[in-house]
Amino acid sequence: MTSGEVTQVSETVEHYVRLLDAGDVPGVLRLFAEEGVVSSPMQGKIPAREFYPELAATLQRAEITAQEVFVSTTDPHRAAVRFRYDWTAAADNPPNFDCIDVITLDADGLISELRFVYDTHPLRVAWQDALDRLR
Image (tube, rainbow, N blue to C red; front, top):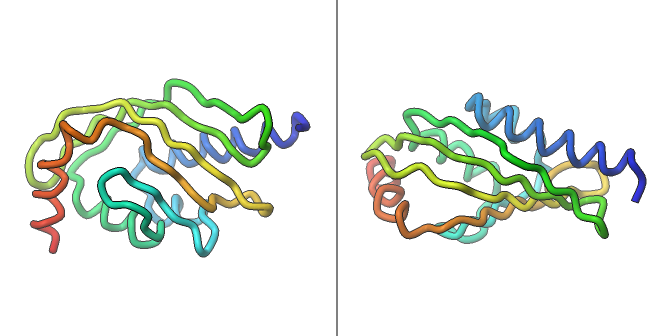
């Protein structure tokens, strides 16, 4: 793996976190391949173009604090970012939580899959309430 490949994946991950923190849904979606998907522990696999607008509609506020970026030592197209997600849902105030996003880039440097890894137990009820109110 070249240092250029490491730099590209790191920059994409850091750009993603900045856009997500800013609530810039169109910007986040520009980082995804047309068929890019999000794999969520609470919703399963869903097209990114559906997931992010729905997420934005359920939030009143979100603050993302990136803590570490990990770049795969064997795959130049894969990285993970660990961050703190402080948010307020439209329904109630769920607890803040730590999350890891595992990101896979395609050959063009766009996100083909983003997999969330976090403990869903404290969030499940508040998330479902927010989705129910949205629908």
